[in-house]
Image (cartoon, rainbow, N blue to C red; front, side):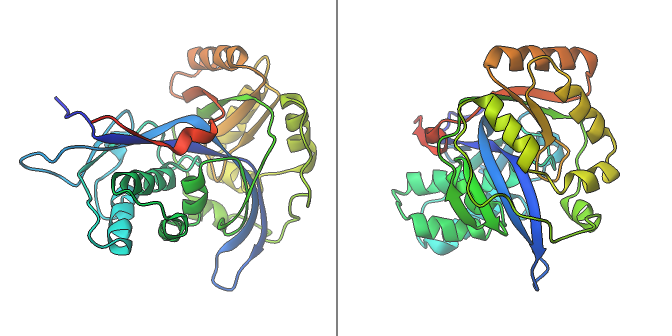
Length: 302
């Protein structure tokens, strides 16, 4: 039987409602302009008591089989970065409950690493936003936004963050056709790296329908076309989700292959996910709510 955790932190799924690739830097990184939200669902990171034969990281959950507890695992990498930045900090054994598909464009690994930083900071009584942000940046471009885990406009390579206030309530269905997509492979297929950015000023949305209309008319995911070339099934997922009753808008998130559908309420999202699950048993489908501002909080259980 697994030991009861000392504390836990949710690593929420990150959804790119829009992702504009607006340039390429001399160092090879692409400059982005993106609108990001987080779901009230994701992986879970737990600190557990040390066992007689303790391992630094145990991995459980529906997608555990595809993930190794090696040095490239972002949970372990985050723990090592934290230990180097805060010498003497206690680093307990960790457990990852892997609920999100791998290589799916919804920030799973980066969210896991960022949640690990939040968890270790809470356990060690560290309240150092700038230090934790520096640690998160070492996880990769998505690290800082996953550390924040709130609606954001992300620019640069993902490190220039602005809070995105005043979003209306809405729900989503996340749909993945059961495949992973390589982000480098998608970027290699990108024909134009200097696309127009998002509008300078973002409007205030009266409801989910207004948000969907704005996303349709004024935003893009510049990686969607390249990702469909890598995995043509993505187009079918988008079409089926967009055709679901109640769906206001559908688009691929990040570099794929997960697609989100925007819904005005939880019931229409739940019905759409249930119907698609009946029709596509191999797809991963999840109705989710928009995360509350407290999604990044660490809960102590021991």
